Length: 466
Image 1: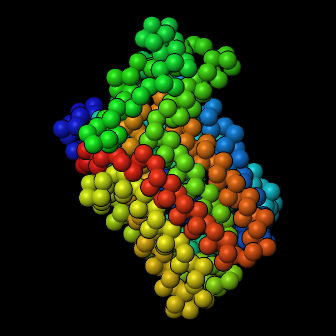
Image 2: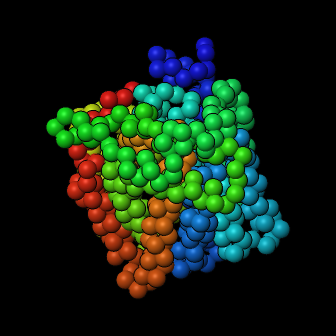
């Protein structure tokens, strides 16, 4: 079976895609274990809302500071070595936590430092990962590929959240995080086994050809008009496929001025695309809302509701199953509602689900039932939204700009998340945890309304469904 991307082959028979798929699924499992274990560990060390906000900021600030540079850097390089290096670095960093626990020098400042260093590796990995997928599969297979990756991530979520609480209870949080370190090693091995070679046209063509094609920074990218389909719908076919704009990063030119120019190209490209602008605005509101409420989520559930780690893990596992259902139904939902309508209404549905948690009265039956209901409503809605939004972004962007486009949007989201975490840290003790959670839900609702008012709402249904 050839490993080259061909739309005629189902992706489950595409060997290189399957290798990427397997490695990512395993590392997602470990990362989700850490997502629960790290705040539990911080709470065990006496963290309050302000300290939890600091822990969240340790993830967001470094990623925000290096995000745009990571996009330009990734566009200069082959993506596969970047993925492997980031996996190995994250494995080494997470291994510090169980070692510190054994040595008796585990502390909140150490957790903050590990979180910050891991965040840098993670943003580089994520930018390279989203730019790497379109080099493995055809653009017509992007929705299928993202759906499969998200579906397996949902299975990993179910497994991780179903076992994380018991792993922490049985082996303690530091050793649960050691499992995450191991998962990154396994992921690196799978990516290492990928045989497909990446097209590295940039180092051969360079900036001279960009100018010859009319792709001088600040010209085409900032002014390119997006084609309109019938009835005023935005055309889903990616403008950049025939776009003479910024074709490749400058070969062998590593000066800061050239580097800054390449970063600016990514920002101008996002600003010039109506659909990307709409997704950026909604993404920032969504990121703010989830971080604002999410910063105090576990503290509220653990202390106010009194739900132990084992039962929390089982509730979150329900979200994994519902996310799996969302990933499997993503193509049908977007085709039935239309891509733009689906994106907007999915966020409204997610906001409704978010309001259920602050309504939970206690750890009694009703409280647990509302927690489960939130997982059944919000998780699949957000999963379908992410599959559709990521696929749309990838279709609208040429390969040479994928890294910078992803980094630009992620940097904006990190800025919004950082603002949400800071606001939660300042207001969590002042307005109370329930009010903070409701405020987060309101921001998610605002994200859905922003899409309803943006050109994204007019997008036709995705024609590249699996």
